[in-house]
Image (cartoon, rainbow, N blue to C red; front, side):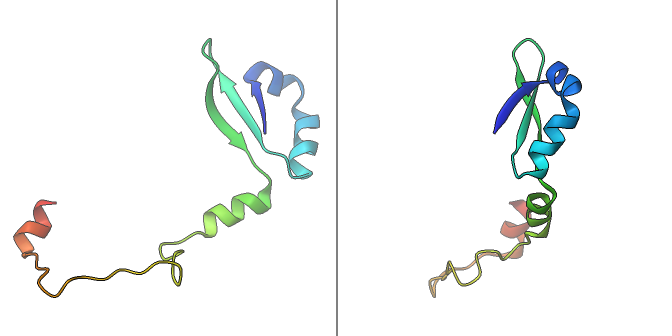
Length: 79
């Protein structure tokens, strides 16, 4: 993944889009500290991220509760 400041992204935007289309991710940094503020990802990667739903661990993880495990409604609401 390339890390580029905003000014460089602005000046090389078209060529960076070609890189993204080829599957590369571009990180954009901002400010004096070069703080990471955004990442440009290929559309297929973005669609995978958006498609993730709760339950992606289905079949990969298990949960079990002991027979003596109890929680009252009040305890649940205080969490």
